Image (cartoon, rainbow, N blue to C red; front, side, top):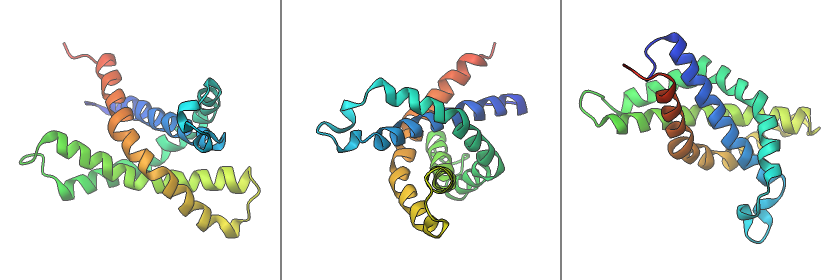
Length: 167
């Protein structure tokens, strides 16, 4: 785990881009209609990963910004409310922090995506934004939670450990 502000920033950068890329792959596959084909996501092509990478280049910055402004703090507060590291299993406390952070960041990033992709780039009426936001959140929350728990966080911890080995 990070031991200073520089390490904390690098950890946050890795986590932000790991989350953004996974969510962009998921959303790009849906946008390209793979979820509606026989075989579903199993029919994805490499173009999904390339298109997702392009969107991740800027969506990762939004994740980094909003997680640093409020997502991480609110996730930590959620964990502190439900888990005591002195008494409870450390891994359980980590999961509570991850779940709390996703519970804040998913609606935040769903709003960013709804405004950017539907209203600004898609031309949807701003009046429809609340409905689009809710729909985007409902689509993304299950994936965000599981992606964070089982892919992005383990990958981030692994890579961070490789970058900052302790002697």
